[in-house]
Length: 113
Image 1 (cartoon, rainbow, N blue to C red):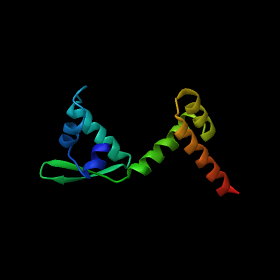
Image 2: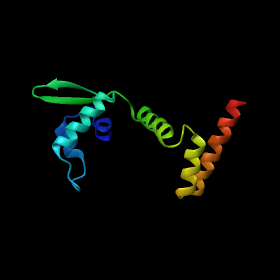
Image 3: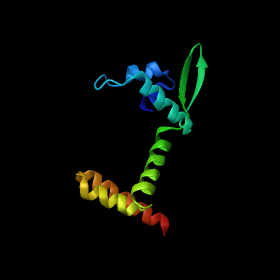
C-alpha cells in the first residue's frame, strides 16, 4: 500500500521494483497481495494495454484506523484500554510521547464531559 500511496498508481512490476531487494519478493506474491487488497476494497485497477494499473481507494489514515479497529476486535476484545496497557507494558515510550498521550487523554475526557 505504501508504494501505491506514494505513486498514486502502479502496476505489479512497479510495486515489485519499489520493494526492498532483500529478501526478494516474488512477482506472483505481489500480484496475489494486490488481488487480495482489491477484494477487500483497498484498491481498484484499470487495464492499460496488457497491464493492470492499481489505484488506492482507501487513504493511509483510513487504512490505519481500520487496522487498529481490527486489532482491537481480534486481539483485545474491543477494549482500547487493553491495547494501551499492552503497549505501555511491552514497549519503550519516550517521555515526549507519554506527554502527548496524556494530553490526548485529557482532551478526550474534556470532550466527553
